[in-house]
Image (cartoon, rainbow, N blue to C red; front, side, top):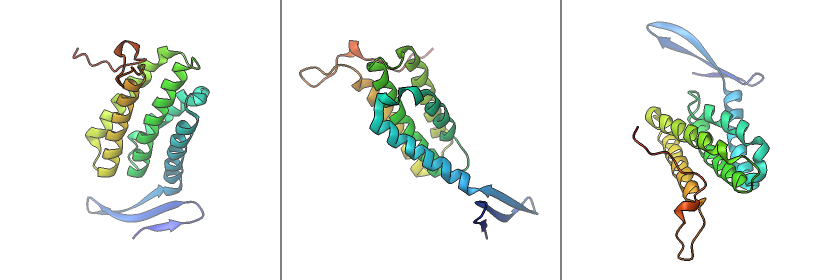
Length: 168
């Protein structure tokens, strides 16, 4: 049975590991704070879009690390969805010249790589679904970055960024 220390936010339990009893302690408050931070990044990116430009790269770096964090599937799910919104905000910032578009390739590749990595190792169905949704949202954002034509299609020559799908 887990014991929670309300003052410190630490939760501990005695577990049997290899025949030995060990006390395992985890700072659940810190994990909860990271999940909340990912949710806030999602909300900020959705609301502010490209106007968040000065903060996008640091936010993306932090979010990328949270996507594969081993402590909380809720945090991984929140971080994956936040990453997609942050990528959309980065595209918006580049389209408004708030951000140098040369950074987009690295952001796109690192985002796709981390989300694909998380898909391989994720055992929680909800976190895996959020990661897959984030992949879809990022690819759709790339497609939607092109000019819309009269027929509703997109002009592929005006796409701001596209994933590198070469098999090299």
